[in-house]
Image (cartoon, rainbow, N blue to C red):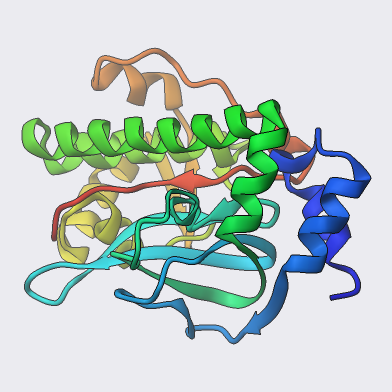
Length: 253
């Protein structure tokens, strides 16, 4: 377990915890290295631990009724996931997979609950995480019901730019690398449709495409087209500590 404490301290959720509290979590926790493409957990696995990503990248997914993968979230180092284990919900209803080789720290749910009982800031932080992710669910379901493929993709690109955007001479470059299939799995479309829509956006001068790379050349114009406010870049991206991009929805391609 040596070395866990550094990763737990790096998690923003625990930044107000005392050293003693962090050490108690470290003593109770365990770590595991997950190979690229391997599952962190599977549907129906017991939800008995809250997970902290120490290194690598993990995606949270759901399989639709027809067997297609729907991407719910991308988790970055320093972020928690599987947080519903705190509520003692029983089994998982989605699965987590390592996008690249990742190190994951598992904190038993009962250890988290005990710490939350004595640490009001931590309790509030967990509540905010759950509430934030619920709002994302509601917004994404609403988008699916009422927006076109292009509008959904525009919303997603702007959302990613706000959280993962990096100012360059060409525009706002997304520091997260996603394939067309990844984007399709997020917005509930097909890879072919996403490719066509992205091509049209590039022709219109809104974006520039590279290998798993997207640059928003005119983000304000893109935002205007779908009737939302211009984006504001997350300052943490400039410090190379990107936040979670949580993309949960409950629909298929």
